[in-house]
Image 1 (cartoon, rainbow, N blue to C red):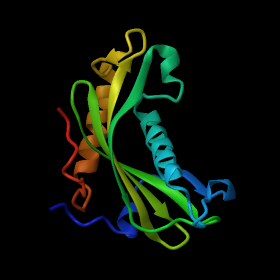
Image 2 (cartoon, rainbow, N blue to C red; image 1 turned 90 degrees about the horizontal axis):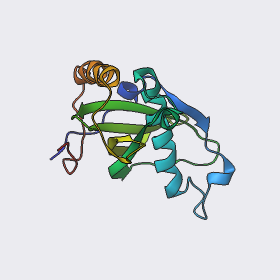
Image 3 (cartoon, helix red, strand yellow; image 1 turned 180 degrees about the vertical axis):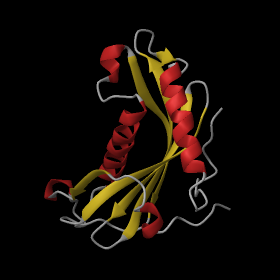
Image 4 (tube, rainbow, N blue to C red; image 1 turned 30 degrees about the horizontal axis):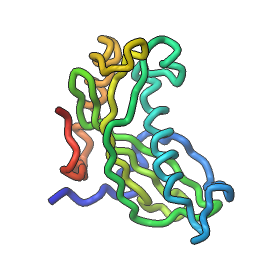
Length: 165
C-alpha cells in the first residue's frame, strides 16, 4: 500500500512550473482538461524542473536527451477551462542511466491536487540513441536534489509499480 497523497499545502511549498490557466483549446467534450493534456503539462513541468540541474530545453542539440520509459498516472480531481494550474516535482532517485520522479498537477483555483504522474526517464546519447550514463555534473545535481527531496516532511506516494533498475 502506498502512502496517502500529499496535501495541496504540502505541495505548494515546492517550486511551481508551467503555471497557467487551463486553455479552452485543451477542453474535451466532458468540459474538462482532456486526458492527453494532463500528461503533456506534467511532462513540461518535469522538463522545466530539470533545467537548474543541468538539463536545458535544448539538450538534444548538445548530444544528450531525456526519454520517458514508464509512467503511472493518477487522476484525482478534474481541471476545467480557466482553472489556474501548476506542476510540482519530487525527484525520488536515480541510477547510472535513469531517474525516477513524481510530478503533481495542482488545481490552484480550488487548492487541491488534481493529477499525479510518476515517471522513469532515461539519459540518452543522441549520437547512438542509446541509454548512457548521466554526465557527472548532472548526476551530482540530481543527487543533491534527490537528497533535498528525501527530507520533505511527507512520505512519498509512489505507486510501487515503477522503480529503477
